Length: 493
Image (cartoon, rainbow, N blue to C red):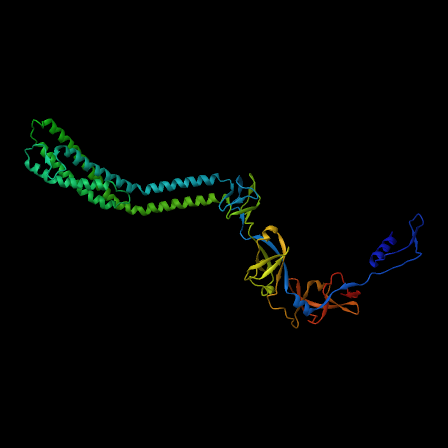
Protein backbone atom coordinates (compact mmCIF):
# COMPACT_ATOMS: atom_id res chain seq x y z
CA UNK A 1 0.00 0.00 0.00
CA UNK A 2 2.93 2.35 0.65
CA UNK A 3 3.88 2.05 -2.96
CA UNK A 4 0.50 3.32 -4.12
CA UNK A 5 0.70 6.25 -1.73
CA UNK A 6 4.15 7.18 -2.99
CA UNK A 7 2.94 6.95 -6.54
CA UNK A 8 -0.03 9.14 -5.85
CA UNK A 9 2.14 11.79 -4.19
CA UNK A 10 4.52 11.74 -7.08
CA UNK A 11 1.77 12.22 -9.62
CA UNK A 12 0.12 15.12 -7.78
CA UNK A 13 3.38 16.90 -7.11
CA UNK A 14 4.69 16.88 -10.62
CA UNK A 15 1.32 17.04 -12.39
CA UNK A 16 1.79 14.07 -14.66
CA UNK A 17 -0.96 13.99 -17.20
CA UNK A 18 -0.41 10.60 -18.77
CA UNK A 19 1.03 7.61 -16.90
CA UNK A 20 0.50 4.41 -18.87
CA UNK A 21 1.39 1.57 -16.56
CA UNK A 22 0.72 -2.05 -16.16
CA UNK A 23 0.25 -3.12 -12.59
CA UNK A 24 0.24 -6.69 -11.44
CA UNK A 25 -0.64 -7.92 -8.00
CA UNK A 26 1.18 -11.10 -7.20
CA UNK A 27 1.16 -13.16 -4.06
CA UNK A 28 -1.10 -13.67 -1.00
CA UNK A 29 0.99 -11.19 1.02
CA UNK A 30 -0.19 -8.31 -1.22
CA UNK A 31 3.14 -7.64 -2.93
CA UNK A 32 2.69 -5.37 -5.89
CA UNK A 33 4.84 -5.36 -9.00
CA UNK A 34 4.49 -2.79 -11.71
CA UNK A 35 5.90 -2.44 -15.14
CA UNK A 36 5.63 0.47 -17.46
CA UNK A 37 5.64 -0.13 -21.14
CA UNK A 38 5.78 3.59 -21.84
CA UNK A 39 5.88 6.70 -19.67
CA UNK A 40 5.31 10.14 -21.07
CA UNK A 41 5.54 13.11 -18.67
CA UNK A 42 4.81 16.67 -19.46
CA UNK A 43 5.43 19.36 -16.80
CA UNK A 44 3.34 22.50 -16.57
CA UNK A 45 5.03 25.82 -17.29
CA UNK A 46 6.55 28.00 -14.47
CA UNK A 47 4.24 30.12 -12.29
CA UNK A 48 3.70 33.70 -13.35
CA UNK A 49 4.49 36.47 -10.83
CA UNK A 50 4.27 40.25 -10.78
CA UNK A 51 7.26 42.35 -9.81
CA UNK A 52 7.51 46.07 -9.12
CA UNK A 53 9.91 48.63 -7.76
CA UNK A 54 9.31 49.39 -4.08
CA UNK A 55 9.18 53.12 -4.83
CA UNK A 56 6.36 52.50 -7.32
CA UNK A 57 4.47 50.33 -4.82
CA UNK A 58 4.73 53.02 -2.16
CA UNK A 59 3.60 55.79 -4.50
CA UNK A 60 0.65 53.69 -5.56
CA UNK A 61 -0.31 52.81 -2.01
CA UNK A 62 -2.60 55.77 -1.64
CA UNK A 63 -5.65 53.85 -0.45
CA UNK A 64 -6.19 52.33 2.96
CA UNK A 65 -8.56 49.37 3.22
CA UNK A 66 -10.23 48.83 6.59
CA UNK A 67 -13.27 47.01 7.93
CA UNK A 68 -16.04 49.27 9.25
CA UNK A 69 -19.16 48.52 11.23
CA UNK A 70 -22.51 49.97 10.19
CA UNK A 71 -24.22 51.56 13.17
CA UNK A 72 -27.14 53.86 13.78
CA UNK A 73 -26.33 57.53 14.24
CA UNK A 74 -28.76 57.57 17.18
CA UNK A 75 -28.67 54.36 19.20
CA UNK A 76 -29.17 53.49 22.87
CA UNK A 77 -28.27 50.32 24.74
CA UNK A 78 -30.71 49.88 27.63
CA UNK A 79 -29.59 48.13 30.82
CA UNK A 80 -31.38 47.47 34.10
CA UNK A 81 -30.52 49.48 37.21
CA UNK A 82 -31.72 46.89 39.73
CA UNK A 83 -32.38 43.16 39.70
CA UNK A 84 -35.73 41.41 39.99
CA UNK A 85 -38.47 39.53 38.19
CA UNK A 86 -40.14 41.01 35.10
CA UNK A 87 -43.84 41.51 35.90
CA UNK A 88 -44.92 43.54 32.87
CA UNK A 89 -43.77 43.60 29.25
CA UNK A 90 -45.23 46.33 27.08
CA UNK A 91 -43.21 46.08 23.84
CA UNK A 92 -41.96 43.49 21.34
CA UNK A 93 -38.88 43.07 19.18
CA UNK A 94 -39.10 45.30 16.10
CA UNK A 95 -41.61 47.75 17.63
CA UNK A 96 -41.21 51.44 16.94
CA UNK A 97 -41.11 53.15 20.34
CA UNK A 98 -41.04 56.75 21.49
CA UNK A 99 -38.70 58.48 23.92
CA UNK A 100 -39.76 57.73 27.50
CA UNK A 101 -42.06 54.85 26.51
CA UNK A 102 -42.26 52.03 29.07
CA UNK A 103 -40.87 48.77 27.69
CA UNK A 104 -41.14 46.59 30.78
CA UNK A 105 -41.39 46.69 34.57
CA UNK A 106 -39.54 44.85 37.30
CA UNK A 107 -41.55 43.75 40.37
CA UNK A 108 -42.06 46.99 42.34
CA UNK A 109 -44.92 46.59 44.84
CA UNK A 110 -42.69 47.59 47.79
CA UNK A 111 -41.41 50.67 45.95
CA UNK A 112 -44.96 51.78 45.16
CA UNK A 113 -45.92 51.40 48.83
CA UNK A 114 -42.97 53.59 49.88
CA UNK A 115 -44.05 56.25 47.35
CA UNK A 116 -47.59 56.26 48.75
CA UNK A 117 -46.29 56.62 52.31
CA UNK A 118 -43.96 59.47 51.34
CA UNK A 119 -46.80 61.22 49.53
CA UNK A 120 -48.94 61.09 52.70
CA UNK A 121 -46.09 62.52 54.79
CA UNK A 122 -45.69 65.38 52.33
CA UNK A 123 -49.41 66.21 52.44
CA UNK A 124 -49.33 66.20 56.26
CA UNK A 125 -46.34 68.57 56.31
CA UNK A 126 -48.09 70.99 53.95
CA UNK A 127 -51.24 70.90 56.06
CA UNK A 128 -49.23 71.60 59.21
CA UNK A 129 -47.61 74.64 57.60
CA UNK A 130 -51.01 76.29 57.00
CA UNK A 131 -52.58 75.49 60.38
CA UNK A 132 -51.38 78.65 62.21
CA UNK A 133 -52.27 81.04 59.40
CA UNK A 134 -55.58 79.27 58.94
CA UNK A 135 -56.42 79.72 62.61
CA UNK A 136 -55.71 83.47 62.45
CA UNK A 137 -57.87 83.84 59.35
CA UNK A 138 -60.72 82.00 61.10
CA UNK A 139 -60.41 84.27 64.16
CA UNK A 140 -60.66 87.40 62.01
CA UNK A 141 -63.70 86.15 60.12
CA UNK A 142 -65.44 85.35 63.43
CA UNK A 143 -64.67 88.86 64.71
CA UNK A 144 -66.05 90.45 61.53
CA UNK A 145 -69.25 88.45 61.93
CA UNK A 146 -69.61 89.44 65.60
CA UNK A 147 -69.26 93.16 64.80
CA UNK A 148 -71.75 92.95 61.93
CA UNK A 149 -74.31 91.13 64.05
CA UNK A 150 -73.96 93.57 66.92
CA UNK A 151 -74.25 96.77 64.89
CA UNK A 152 -76.56 95.68 62.07
CA UNK A 153 -78.87 93.31 63.94
CA UNK A 154 -78.81 93.86 67.72
CA UNK A 155 -78.64 97.68 67.68
CA UNK A 156 -79.92 98.17 64.13
CA UNK A 157 -83.44 97.05 65.10
CA UNK A 158 -83.70 100.11 67.39
CA UNK A 159 -82.46 102.67 64.84
CA UNK A 160 -84.75 104.41 62.35
CA UNK A 161 -83.38 105.42 58.96
CA UNK A 162 -79.95 103.85 59.65
CA UNK A 163 -78.59 104.74 56.17
CA UNK A 164 -79.45 108.42 56.42
CA UNK A 165 -77.14 111.18 57.65
CA UNK A 166 -79.18 111.51 60.87
CA UNK A 167 -80.22 108.06 62.08
CA UNK A 168 -82.61 108.12 65.07
CA UNK A 169 -82.63 105.87 68.17
CA UNK A 170 -86.29 104.84 68.63
CA UNK A 171 -86.23 103.88 72.33
CA UNK A 172 -87.05 106.65 74.81
CA UNK A 173 -84.71 106.80 77.82
CA UNK A 174 -84.25 108.81 80.95
CA UNK A 175 -80.45 108.67 80.30
CA UNK A 176 -80.28 111.47 77.78
CA UNK A 177 -76.47 111.51 77.84
CA UNK A 178 -76.45 107.87 76.71
CA UNK A 179 -78.86 108.70 73.89
CA UNK A 180 -76.59 111.53 72.73
CA UNK A 181 -73.53 109.27 72.70
CA UNK A 182 -75.39 106.61 70.75
CA UNK A 183 -76.29 109.10 68.05
CA UNK A 184 -72.76 110.49 67.80
CA UNK A 185 -71.02 107.07 67.69
CA UNK A 186 -73.39 105.54 65.17
CA UNK A 187 -71.45 106.74 62.05
CA UNK A 188 -68.16 105.44 63.47
CA UNK A 189 -69.71 102.04 64.09
CA UNK A 190 -71.00 101.78 60.56
CA UNK A 191 -67.55 102.72 59.18
CA UNK A 192 -65.95 99.91 61.20
CA UNK A 193 -68.61 97.48 59.99
CA UNK A 194 -68.16 98.45 56.30
CA UNK A 195 -64.33 98.14 56.45
CA UNK A 196 -64.55 94.69 58.00
CA UNK A 197 -67.14 93.54 55.48
CA UNK A 198 -64.75 94.44 52.63
CA UNK A 199 -61.78 92.82 54.38
CA UNK A 200 -63.73 89.60 54.93
CA UNK A 201 -63.88 89.11 51.15
CA UNK A 202 -60.07 89.10 50.67
CA UNK A 203 -58.50 87.92 53.92
CA UNK A 204 -56.34 84.76 53.52
CA UNK A 205 -53.12 83.17 54.74
CA UNK A 206 -51.25 85.52 52.35
CA UNK A 207 -52.72 88.62 54.04
CA UNK A 208 -50.70 90.65 56.55
CA UNK A 209 -52.40 88.85 59.41
CA UNK A 210 -50.37 90.50 62.16
CA UNK A 211 -51.28 93.97 60.88
CA UNK A 212 -54.97 93.08 60.50
CA UNK A 213 -55.16 91.62 64.01
CA UNK A 214 -53.61 94.79 65.45
CA UNK A 215 -56.24 96.83 63.58
CA UNK A 216 -59.26 94.69 64.52
CA UNK A 217 -58.48 94.52 68.25
CA UNK A 218 -59.09 98.24 69.01
CA UNK A 219 -62.15 98.17 66.69
CA UNK A 220 -63.66 95.44 68.82
CA UNK A 221 -63.02 97.51 71.93
CA UNK A 222 -64.81 100.49 70.37
CA UNK A 223 -67.80 98.32 69.44
CA UNK A 224 -67.98 96.88 72.94
CA UNK A 225 -67.99 100.39 74.44
CA UNK A 226 -70.80 101.34 72.05
CA UNK A 227 -72.82 98.30 73.13
CA UNK A 228 -72.30 99.19 76.80
CA UNK A 229 -73.76 102.66 76.15
CA UNK A 230 -76.78 101.14 74.34
CA UNK A 231 -77.41 98.77 77.25
CA UNK A 232 -77.21 101.71 79.69
CA UNK A 233 -79.79 103.62 77.67
CA UNK A 234 -82.09 100.61 77.48
CA UNK A 235 -81.89 100.01 81.22
CA UNK A 236 -83.22 103.59 81.67
CA UNK A 237 -85.79 103.11 78.95
CA UNK A 238 -89.32 104.60 79.19
CA UNK A 239 -92.23 102.44 78.03
CA UNK A 240 -94.65 103.87 75.50
CA UNK A 241 -97.76 102.60 73.80
CA UNK A 242 -95.71 101.69 70.73
CA UNK A 243 -92.73 100.55 72.83
CA UNK A 244 -93.87 98.41 75.77
CA UNK A 245 -91.47 97.32 78.51
CA UNK A 246 -91.47 93.77 77.14
CA UNK A 247 -90.01 94.98 73.87
CA UNK A 248 -87.34 96.94 75.71
CA UNK A 249 -86.44 93.78 77.69
CA UNK A 250 -85.98 91.84 74.43
CA UNK A 251 -83.72 94.62 73.12
CA UNK A 252 -81.62 94.42 76.28
CA UNK A 253 -81.20 90.65 75.90
CA UNK A 254 -80.18 90.94 72.24
CA UNK A 255 -77.60 93.66 72.85
CA UNK A 256 -76.20 91.83 75.88
CA UNK A 257 -75.72 88.66 73.80
CA UNK A 258 -74.03 90.70 71.05
CA UNK A 259 -71.67 92.22 73.65
CA UNK A 260 -70.74 88.74 74.88
CA UNK A 261 -69.94 87.64 71.32
CA UNK A 262 -67.80 90.74 70.70
CA UNK A 263 -65.94 90.19 73.98
CA UNK A 264 -65.20 86.56 73.02
CA UNK A 265 -63.89 87.69 69.63
CA UNK A 266 -61.74 90.31 71.32
CA UNK A 267 -60.13 87.62 73.48
CA UNK A 268 -59.54 85.40 70.44
CA UNK A 269 -58.01 88.24 68.40
CA UNK A 270 -55.75 89.21 71.27
CA UNK A 271 -54.57 85.63 71.69
CA UNK A 272 -53.99 85.21 67.95
CA UNK A 273 -52.01 88.46 67.79
CA UNK A 274 -49.78 87.36 70.65
CA UNK A 275 -49.28 83.88 69.16
CA UNK A 276 -48.52 85.00 65.62
CA UNK A 277 -44.86 86.03 66.22
CA UNK A 278 -44.20 82.55 67.61
CA UNK A 279 -45.97 81.09 64.58
CA UNK A 280 -43.77 83.14 62.24
CA UNK A 281 -40.66 81.76 63.90
CA UNK A 282 -42.10 78.31 63.35
CA UNK A 283 -42.57 78.89 59.64
CA UNK A 284 -38.94 78.00 58.98
CA UNK A 285 -39.33 74.71 60.82
CA UNK A 286 -42.51 73.99 58.86
CA UNK A 287 -40.72 74.72 55.60
CA UNK A 288 -37.87 72.46 56.66
CA UNK A 289 -40.34 69.68 57.44
CA UNK A 290 -41.92 70.11 54.00
CA UNK A 291 -38.51 69.96 52.29
CA UNK A 292 -37.66 66.80 54.18
CA UNK A 293 -40.97 65.27 53.16
CA UNK A 294 -40.41 66.32 49.53
CA UNK A 295 -36.93 64.78 49.61
CA UNK A 296 -38.28 61.49 50.92
CA UNK A 297 -41.03 61.54 48.29
CA UNK A 298 -38.58 62.23 45.43
CA UNK A 299 -36.24 59.50 46.70
CA UNK A 300 -39.15 57.05 46.73
CA UNK A 301 -40.08 58.05 43.18
CA UNK A 302 -36.47 57.59 42.04
CA UNK A 303 -36.38 54.13 43.59
CA UNK A 304 -39.63 53.24 41.81
CA UNK A 305 -38.35 54.61 38.50
CA UNK A 306 -35.40 52.19 38.64
CA UNK A 307 -37.88 49.32 38.30
CA UNK A 308 -39.38 50.77 35.12
CA UNK A 309 -37.47 50.10 31.88
CA UNK A 310 -37.99 52.99 29.46
CA UNK A 311 -36.67 53.85 26.03
CA UNK A 312 -34.45 56.96 26.27
CA UNK A 313 -34.85 57.75 22.56
CA UNK A 314 -37.30 57.20 19.73
CA UNK A 315 -36.48 54.38 17.35
CA UNK A 316 -36.86 50.68 16.59
CA UNK A 317 -36.31 47.87 19.08
CA UNK A 318 -33.48 46.04 17.31
CA UNK A 319 -32.81 43.88 20.36
CA UNK A 320 -35.21 42.93 23.16
CA UNK A 321 -34.13 39.95 25.24
CA UNK A 322 -36.62 39.82 28.10
CA UNK A 323 -40.03 38.27 28.52
CA UNK A 324 -42.64 38.03 31.27
CA UNK A 325 -41.36 36.13 34.29
CA UNK A 326 -37.64 36.49 33.50
CA UNK A 327 -35.28 37.34 36.34
CA UNK A 328 -32.84 40.13 35.46
CA UNK A 329 -29.71 41.22 37.29
CA UNK A 330 -28.42 44.79 37.79
CA UNK A 331 -26.66 46.35 34.75
CA UNK A 332 -27.96 43.57 32.46
CA UNK A 333 -28.47 44.78 28.88
CA UNK A 334 -32.05 44.03 27.88
CA UNK A 335 -32.70 46.13 24.76
CA UNK A 336 -31.17 48.20 21.98
CA UNK A 337 -33.15 51.04 20.41
CA UNK A 338 -31.84 52.47 17.14
CA UNK A 339 -32.86 54.86 14.42
CA UNK A 340 -32.42 52.48 11.49
CA UNK A 341 -33.18 55.21 8.98
CA UNK A 342 -29.96 57.10 9.81
CA UNK A 343 -26.82 54.95 9.57
CA UNK A 344 -23.11 55.65 9.59
CA UNK A 345 -19.96 53.56 9.26
CA UNK A 346 -17.41 53.44 12.07
CA UNK A 347 -13.84 52.41 11.21
CA UNK A 348 -10.50 52.51 13.02
CA UNK A 349 -7.11 53.51 11.61
CA UNK A 350 -3.60 53.63 13.02
CA UNK A 351 -1.94 56.77 14.31
CA UNK A 352 0.26 56.94 11.20
CA UNK A 353 -2.76 56.90 8.87
CA UNK A 354 -4.58 59.72 10.64
CA UNK A 355 -2.44 62.35 8.91
CA UNK A 356 -3.49 61.01 5.50
CA UNK A 357 -7.25 61.45 5.93
CA UNK A 358 -9.43 64.48 6.69
CA UNK A 359 -13.02 65.40 7.48
CA UNK A 360 -15.00 65.82 4.26
CA UNK A 361 -12.89 63.29 2.36
CA UNK A 362 -14.72 60.76 0.16
CA UNK A 363 -14.47 57.02 0.80
CA UNK A 364 -15.64 53.93 -1.07
CA UNK A 365 -17.68 51.13 0.48
CA UNK A 366 -18.62 47.70 -0.75
CA UNK A 367 -21.35 47.75 -3.38
CA UNK A 368 -20.03 50.87 -5.13
CA UNK A 369 -21.30 53.16 -2.36
CA UNK A 370 -19.61 56.45 -1.61
CA UNK A 371 -19.42 57.94 1.86
CA UNK A 372 -17.90 61.02 3.47
CA UNK A 373 -15.68 61.22 6.54
CA UNK A 374 -17.63 63.27 9.09
CA UNK A 375 -15.51 62.90 12.22
CA UNK A 376 -12.02 61.81 13.19
CA UNK A 377 -11.20 61.15 16.84
CA UNK A 378 -8.51 63.50 18.15
CA UNK A 379 -6.82 60.76 20.20
CA UNK A 380 -6.27 57.00 20.34
CA UNK A 381 -8.96 54.76 21.75
CA UNK A 382 -7.59 53.54 25.13
CA UNK A 383 -8.74 49.97 24.44
CA UNK A 384 -7.99 49.39 20.75
CA UNK A 385 -5.10 51.88 20.58
CA UNK A 386 -6.46 53.06 17.23
CA UNK A 387 -8.25 56.17 16.02
CA UNK A 388 -12.00 56.15 15.39
CA UNK A 389 -13.29 57.45 12.05
CA UNK A 390 -16.98 58.11 11.43
CA UNK A 391 -18.27 57.98 7.88
CA UNK A 392 -21.55 59.51 6.75
CA UNK A 393 -23.58 57.41 4.31
CA UNK A 394 -25.82 58.48 1.40
CA UNK A 395 -29.57 57.84 1.39
CA UNK A 396 -29.08 54.95 -1.06
CA UNK A 397 -26.99 53.12 1.54
CA UNK A 398 -29.99 52.83 3.88
CA UNK A 399 -31.63 50.43 1.42
CA UNK A 400 -28.70 48.02 1.06
CA UNK A 401 -26.90 48.24 4.41
CA UNK A 402 -28.11 46.89 7.75
CA UNK A 403 -27.42 48.16 11.25
CA UNK A 404 -24.62 46.01 12.73
CA UNK A 405 -23.26 44.85 9.36
CA UNK A 406 -19.49 44.81 8.66
CA UNK A 407 -18.26 46.23 5.35
CA UNK A 408 -14.89 46.95 3.80
CA UNK A 409 -14.08 50.61 3.28
CA UNK A 410 -11.41 52.10 1.07
CA UNK A 411 -10.11 55.30 2.62
CA UNK A 412 -8.60 57.14 -0.33
CA UNK A 413 -5.44 59.03 0.42
CA UNK A 414 -5.31 60.79 -2.94
CA UNK A 415 -5.88 64.15 -1.29
CA UNK A 416 -2.79 63.70 0.83
CA UNK A 417 0.82 63.97 -0.22
CA UNK A 418 2.19 60.82 -1.83
CA UNK A 419 4.39 58.65 0.32
CA UNK A 420 8.01 59.50 -0.45
CA UNK A 421 10.58 56.71 -0.08
CA UNK A 422 13.13 57.48 2.57
CA UNK A 423 16.49 55.89 3.22
CA UNK A 424 16.24 53.25 5.94
CA UNK A 425 12.45 53.02 6.31
CA UNK A 426 10.20 52.02 3.45
CA UNK A 427 6.88 50.18 3.14
CA UNK A 428 5.83 47.14 1.14
CA UNK A 429 2.48 45.38 0.67
CA UNK A 430 1.83 42.69 3.26
CA UNK A 431 1.32 40.21 0.41
CA UNK A 432 4.98 40.62 -0.61
CA UNK A 433 6.19 39.52 2.83
CA UNK A 434 6.95 35.85 3.60
CA UNK A 435 7.44 35.05 7.26
CA UNK A 436 9.51 31.94 8.02
CA UNK A 437 10.48 30.36 11.31
CA UNK A 438 13.67 32.34 11.80
CA UNK A 439 13.54 35.09 9.21
CA UNK A 440 11.33 37.50 7.22
CA UNK A 441 12.00 37.62 3.46
CA UNK A 442 10.84 39.05 0.17
CA UNK A 443 11.55 37.64 -3.29
CA UNK A 444 13.11 39.08 -6.39
CA UNK A 445 13.51 37.29 -9.72
CA UNK A 446 17.03 36.42 -10.94
CA UNK A 447 17.54 34.39 -14.12
CA UNK A 448 13.99 32.99 -13.93
CA UNK A 449 14.27 31.84 -10.32
CA UNK A 450 13.19 33.34 -6.98
CA UNK A 451 15.91 34.89 -4.85
CA UNK A 452 15.24 35.63 -1.17
CA UNK A 453 16.14 38.90 0.58
CA UNK A 454 16.09 38.84 4.38
CA UNK A 455 14.52 41.99 5.89
CA UNK A 456 13.65 43.55 9.23
CA UNK A 457 10.04 44.73 9.54
CA UNK A 458 8.49 47.53 11.61
CA UNK A 459 4.96 48.82 12.16
CA UNK A 460 1.87 47.64 10.30
CA UNK A 461 -0.07 50.41 8.51
CA UNK A 462 -3.27 49.22 6.86
CA UNK A 463 -2.26 46.79 4.08
CA UNK A 464 1.39 47.92 4.17
CA UNK A 465 4.21 47.00 6.56
CA UNK A 466 7.30 49.09 7.23
CA UNK A 467 10.77 47.66 6.38
CA UNK A 468 13.59 49.09 8.50
CA UNK A 469 16.48 47.05 7.02
CA UNK A 470 17.28 44.96 3.96
CA UNK A 471 15.75 46.87 1.04
CA UNK A 472 16.06 50.06 -0.93
CA UNK A 473 13.40 52.00 -2.78
CA UNK A 474 14.80 50.85 -6.14
CA UNK A 475 14.64 47.12 -5.35
CA UNK A 476 12.23 45.14 -7.51
CA UNK A 477 10.27 42.56 -5.52
CA UNK A 478 7.52 40.03 -6.16
CA UNK A 479 4.23 41.68 -5.20
CA UNK A 480 2.53 38.45 -4.02
CA UNK A 481 4.76 35.91 -2.27
CA UNK A 482 2.00 33.55 -1.19
CA UNK A 483 2.74 29.92 -2.11
CA UNK A 484 6.27 30.69 -3.32
CA UNK A 485 9.64 29.47 -2.03
CA UNK A 486 13.22 30.33 -2.69
CA UNK A 487 14.60 28.76 -5.88
CA UNK A 488 11.23 28.28 -7.62
CA UNK A 489 11.24 28.81 -11.40
CA UNK A 490 8.86 31.64 -12.28
CA UNK A 491 7.85 33.75 -15.24
CA UNK A 492 7.43 37.52 -14.85
CA UNK A 493 4.10 38.86 -16.12
